[in-house]
Length: 238
Image (cartoon, rainbow, N blue to C red):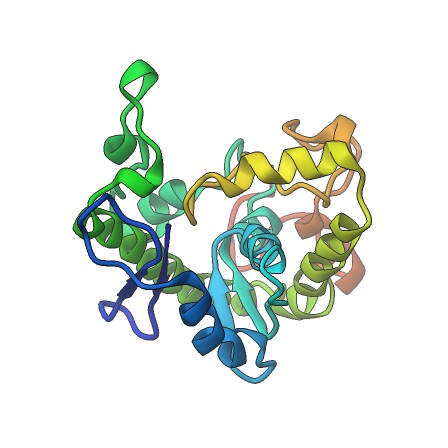
């Protein structure tokens, strides 16, 4: 229903593409044409939460999202693989001590639920900009933490590029995969699943790492020769 862009914390801009009858909005084709050079640029980095979902949505309209920066969901999975969820709401509470609004507050629930395009533009913009702003602020904290814990090179060389590989696999997937993606695209940016599809086999999705199976964080430490206990006096990893 719209696109939110944040270049610096607190500077969010919302571009409405659909709106309730009588409310102003822009034409999707014109907006995407104007943004396409930026979205496809390798040098302009894009940060977000669950970038895979954004990439798939843009591919449906013929725009390959390039120049990926930090994906806050993937980064959290790398550092906190044992957590049950990796939602943006959870990250906002953990890193920013901030409680975000939920989509259900805008569209309702049950028989009273409406579609996102019926949300008033002002409310949709406030929600979307909050999602983008929180993702940007969390990403900066996460990047510093990844560097401090010796995991940044693993993210840059493996986890980050893997997002694009997973999206490429979706391009060749069957009808079942397409239906699964379509369900995700109906949600606004920042409302994500409880796992990272593609990093785990389908039979493992939604489950905690199996006993004896190294998490990405443990694997990184083993590869780099770190001891099993955390450095700097931190308690041993769960």
